[in-house]
Image (cartoon, rainbow, N blue to C red; front, side):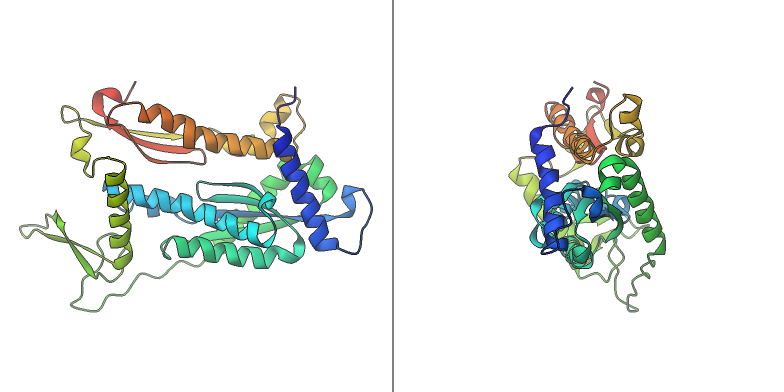
Length: 312
């Protein structure tokens, strides 16, 4: 059964041809793919859940989840500009996988990091790693190559230095969300602090994200507060996460079905998984009155719904 579309196959074929052209231009080594080396670049956002869950207010959750999606797309654009759009095998949910010529690795990673962190206003970082393999390994053992790339990524994340806590001058206020020096008071959000309620303090970035979220929700005709979703004082929270996705993308599931683990087949699977969460599951939720998708992408989805409608 041909379970990979011609588009996916040709997209990856073009990526391979682009890498050969950029790395070996003027030095053609014949039609045998094992004569050429390729780099597989992996990227993954750091502490993405902390960034998303820093606040439970709807405008904050909405804007932050959109920022992650937008930043991932921007990072993908960096690879498109330097190598070509076909180089991006997968981009979604804060993760990227790209095929690159060896001489473009550092330039592409540097630009992608810059684009991603600029789009998240410096509040969310991303880690990249790469592995270099020849064409034979890439075409015949792509699942293992992908596994190695993910392991390299985990090691790079372990090397990453922890960001020191923000220092706030004595007598100044810190942002109640991220801890940076506060510049703004949100007088519409009053925090009960012992017997002395006060406005919530926010830094410029958190304030900007909150306003973006408010504008977005108002534009889409959605409520700003959780009170509008509750039903008989009950609110349901649904968290879903794909099972054994690592095994799927490493090719174990394909081998169980006696299918060859090819790059185009795994690229198809990764896109389908993201599409299922980002589109199919979102469509189901949005058909339920007052139900809200807080975040959807990769193999994750987070939903808030009126109490009685949650199980359905």
